View 1 (cartoon, helix red, strand yellow):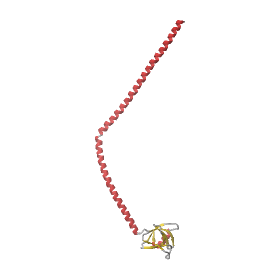
View 2: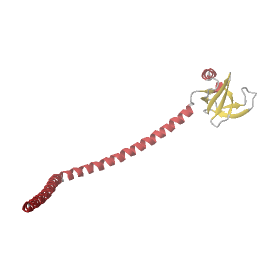
View 3: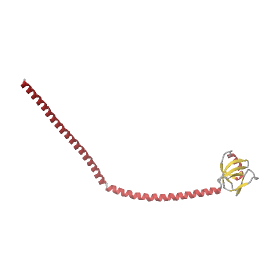
Length: 196
């Protein structure tokens, strides 16, 4: 039965994991048949990789890389119960460790949560006590803004005054120069008319 199962699942070049079935020990030989030399004794539960299948014999490879032929009827695809028990024990140990770690994490988080709750309570007390400070700070910022706007207006007005003073100065200078030119030109005309 096991041979048919393995035959149905194996093809040339197809490697599959199998196990030594419930017998105590089986022989691994150099060829397919009892007349071939024994190269190893395999115990029940040994994990093997099936490499080739011929009638009642299968060529297998151990996890250590040793190859040989064994009787197919002593092989099974089912994981042996002893190996399953070991795997389940390992999984149980892993889960127990994870649970312990999770409980420690929960305790740490609980302590941090308590600390944060205390900090939040103190923060609310400070927030309530500092409400007036926040109002004063807002008023101060508003006054700073108004002060800056007024300084900007004063600077603009001073600039306008300076520009107007320059304009008046230039206007006065212009009037003076125009007057001087007119005065000089009328003097020349008077002289020339006197000479004529």
